[in-house]
Structures are given as structure tokens and as C-alpha cells.
Image (tube, rainbow, N blue to C red):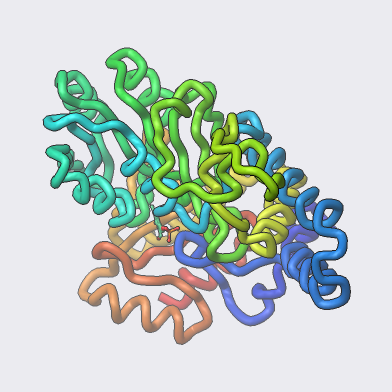
Length: 375
Ligand SMILES: Cc1ncc(COP(=O)(O)O)c(C=O)c1O
């Protein structure tokens, strides 16, 4: 059995259909299923008897695994309930001044637009950059970063509709040169392509586990660089936000020294068990190799689509290719093409004017061909 077939055996979802919707909600592996089962068995049979040894130990182990995945330190990681919460910690935590400007682009998912629009009442303006052919040209971004009032850029690592991959290293460099804070919504690439927060100069990053990380919904991660921690005032604090969070006899209101201060109360511990198993699997297979495999699968898909006269909306050149391929068929509404594919056991969705297919590394060439055949 080759390594991809072995990895595939962890995903029983492959029995029933070609699951090509990892940009939506991904299925979990049997490894994550086992981890959730381990949590459930302990909670059922022993409750909180071994809280420190069983629950806390795993939460802290997973924190170090998240840090490894991102090239970060464990004290720069907080668990959050979703991507939006992480972005909200930044939006609500910075000390804004009237006239400050946030830069986003018009390909962003609403989670990366509304938290910034919500700051209007504080006099903060959001500049929404116009994109071209499904991606944001770097020159446009550079201009916006040069404006004196620009305080923060918030962008997705991969755009959810078009699938354009943003060059985070180049963007990070521009932000550093201009003294602009750099915030990344990483949910559409984390687990599929490597990311190094240090090298990219990212200040804040957020992602939930239920897409390319192949974990469950409702448990995500938030990264805050050590250098940026002091810029954020936690909006909500509670027993867990403080340094001596297991001292219930006295009150010591001193925040945790790291990003743990953003975890105000009890964590989503079962979610963290799942996330840990999912990240273990990804690191074991190797995220670098996963990225290459996903690009090989999506290249095959794009070739087949072009042969069938489909229009591919996703940018595929200049390093912009990702795990998302969006397309339309001549003379057929997107909803109709999507419905036809789903009926034939190929799970894709309609997004932003295209049929969106998003295979992960365990999908097979045969599944890609099944999609093409079903057209
Ligand atoms: C780019 C992007 N950000 C965020 C989300 C979802 O955010 P959350 O994890 O808060 O549900 C999605 C979901 O499709 C997305 O594509």
C-alpha cells in the first residue's frame, strides 16, 4: 500500500462519494474519531477525576503541536471557537484612533469584513481593495499600505471563492516596511499548505479546524505574535485569563503572560482532542507533501475542465494555485452543474459564481476523473 492509499484508509467517507468540499466542511478521519472517542470514554467513566493528567495535559500538548504547525511558540497560541472569534479578538482588542484605516479586499469571506465594518462607530474606516481576475494584485495592495492612516491589513491565506493563494511572505514584507499590522485568516489553507508565521511576519492569525485541518467544528486556533501581545486588550476576561488561574482562594488579576489570556474560561476540550489528532496526522504525512499532492490533483482537474470547455475562474499561475478550483460550464447555470455533480456522488458546492471543488490529499486521481466524467 503506498502512503497515499494508507492515508486514504483513514477516511471512510471515500466509500460513499468523492468528497471534494474541504473548503466547506471537511469530513474527519478515523484518527480524529478515535480521539473524540477517547475523550468520551474518559468523561463517561471517570469524569474529571484525572483532570490535570488527562484533559489539561492534552490541551497543552495540542498547543505545542499547533505552534509547530505554524512555526510559532506555544505561548503565542490560544484556542478559540472559530476563525471569526480570533479576528474579533484583534478587531475589538486594538487601541483604535479615529481615522485609522483597515485594508481588506473584495474576495474576503464575511468573517473578515464585518468585524472591521463594526469599528465604524469608533471612526475606523475599512478600505476594500478591488481585485482583478480572482486575485489581489500586489501593486494595489502596496499603494494602500503606503497610505499614512493604514494601521492593519487583514487578508485570507487563500480566498474562499476564487481559491487565489496570497503570497504571505511578500505581503508580510510590505507590511513590515510600512509599519502596518498583518492579520491572516488562514482557514482556507492551514493543514494543506505550510505556513511560517515568523518568516511571513504575521502578527495575528486565526483559523477553525473544520476545513483543511480535517477536524471538527467549533474549535480553532488564534496566533498572536509575542511582539504584538501588548497591542491587544482582551475584550472578555475570566478565571482562565489570569496567570494564577487555578488559585480560586484569592483574586490575583494579572493576565497570563501569553496568548492564553484570550481563553477566558473552560476550553472546548473535546474539540481540542480532535484538533490534536488531526494535526498529528497532518504533521505525520507532512504538510509540504500534502500541498504538492493537492496541487497535483487540482492541476489534473483544471486540465480536464479546460478539455471540456469549462471556464476555470481560479487563478492558477504565479504561485496562486490552491486546493480550490472554481469553474463554470458553457450554457449551464452553476446551481444546475452543482446539483448534477452532487446527484452523481461528487460533493461540490456553488460559491461566488462558480462550482467550487476542493480536494484534499487523501482524494484520488480516480475521484477527480469521476468529477470530470460526471460533467
Ligand atoms: C476565508 C474564510 N474565513 C472564515 C470562514 C468561517 O469562519 P468561522 O470559522 O468563524 O466559521 C470561512 C468559511 O467558509 C472562510 O472561507
